[in-house]
Every structure is written in C-alpha cells, then in structure tokens.
Amino acid sequence: MRQPSEVSMRYDVVAVGETMAALAPLPPGPLNAGARMLLDAGGAESNVAICLAQAGRHVAWVSRLGADSLGRMVSDRVGRAGVDVSLVAADPRAPTGLYLREPGRVWYYRAGSAASRLTPDVWAADALRHARIVYLTGITPALSASCYELVAGALAERPVADALYVFDVNHRPALWQPGRAAPVLAGLARRADIVFVGRDEAAALWGTSSSDDVRALLAGPGVLVVKDAAAGATSYGPHGRAHVAAPQVQVVDPVGAGDAFAAGYLHGLLGGADEPERLACGHRFAACVLSVVGDIADTARLAAAAADVTAAADVTAAADVRVGRERRSHRADI
Image (cartoon, helix red, strand yellow):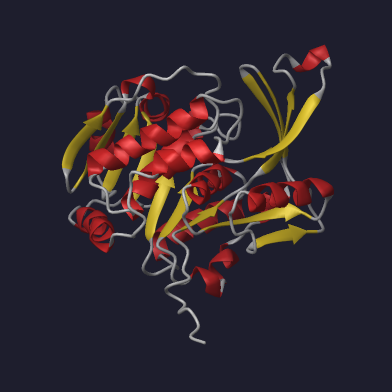
C-alpha cells in the first residue's frame, strides 16, 4: 500500500502559544455574586487553530501545559475540536495558566505558567518542517524572555523554511503596558509576512489615527490587515489596498471574534481566494463567534461559512505575499 508523503501530510497552519483554563459565571455575571462557574479553555492561538480545524484544515497547536488536571482538560478540549495536540508538552514543574472572566473584565493567573517556559526548541520538531503557515501572536513574547526568543527567533531565522509567518499583534495591557510593548510589537510585526492588528489597538500602541497611518508605520509585512470592528477591515499588499465592510451582526459576545477573523482570512488564503474574499471570509468567521457566548463558534455554522472557499491550497497566493514583503527593503531590528 502506498504511504502518504510528508508533504501531503503537512500542516496547513501551526499555531504556537499559551492556552489557559478559563472560569466564568454561568449565566454571565459578576464573580463576586458567587454563581456557578463554567470551566473551559481559552487562548488566542488555539482559538485560531480550532476555527481552522472546524473549516476542515489540518492544524497543529504547539504549547506547554502543566502536568495537571487543568492541563489535561485544555489539551482534550482543543484536541476534540480536531486540532493536532501531539506537539503540546506536559510540564511537571509548572502549572497550567488560569483566567477568570466576568462581563467587562478578565483576571489572569498565568505568572510562572508552563507556557511561560516555552523556548525556541519547539522549532526542532520534525513534524513542523513542511507547514504552510506559522501563526504567532504578540501575547507570547510578553510571557517570558524565552517566549520572546521563541517568537523573535522564528521571525528572524525562519526555522520552518517554506512557511508564511503570520503575526497577530494581540496586545494585552495586563501583560505589558503600551510604552514597553509598542516598540517590541512593531519590531516583530515588521518581520512577518502577514500582520493582523486592530485600528484601536494600533492607536493605543503607536498613536496612529487611520489604517493608512498603520501601513506607513508597518511597511515591512507583505500583507497588513487592519481590523476596525463594525466598520470592516482594510488590507495592504501586492493587491494594493482593499477594504471590505463588516456584515451586520447581532453581537452576543465579542470575545474570540478577532481570532475567528484571522482564521477566516487564512482559510481564504489557503483556498486561493482573492484579497476581498479573504477579508470577507474573515468577517464570516467572526460573525459566527460574535453570535454565541464564548470563544468558539458552532461547528456546523462555521463549516458553512467556510464552504465558499475551495479546499485546495493555492501556492500562487502565498507566493504573492512573499513577493510583496521582499519588495520592501525597510526592516527594523527586533
């Protein structure tokens, strides 16, 4: 019997970063009310991985969890969604991170977590060699010095040689304030092939007032996508400038919508969609999450949102992103 080749089994996307155990009152309300709590898992990178798996993509999540019950719950939760968790390490010397959520506020208990002990050694895994896309966020470099080296080294040295490197700025003020985060996140973003950032997020970090201002600041990436909530999303790249308005959605819970947008855009890229359709696919994925409580959409609904994009990966689309990046000579040191 003929065995599948390594290339045919390669990951469409590899997402690297921390996912924590999450506790929230059920029904939603203030924590001090002492209500029943729902235990789940939450993390930007695994949210993106889950959305892509729901859309039928071959996705791996790379991380580190405590060798504890919360770690097993997180791994099982992400794995049940169809994400490959074989590259997630269990650390017997550090706990799984935890956060508590109430309307309008999140409380983090992640200092010294297992994921904060991630190192650049993760890139040595043979299984990553042929991945199409590496997805990173600005959350990871804020966790520890070794986590910063993991992200900075990946963007500078490209350990997965043929992959597109995607960086979602995802600034978390609870981890580091804008004054410290701004130059670091800008330096990392300038080295990526594709960058996602919110317009309000960019304004808080860098004082920009428009998506055009953000592009002027981040000239390095082959493609820059600036998300502006209900106004839509604007991208810059080899295609020039594209804008797609967001559809009207009855918002139930905004948590996780940005992650879903990134997943939808990458699904469109992998499917060979043109730039407006990639943005539209991002909006469709985000709408699926906005209309439910929690970070993750209903699988059937998200699969339907993904169905308009062909399942075949498009090499030309990826090459266009690289060409756009290589045309720009400006680079900032990390």
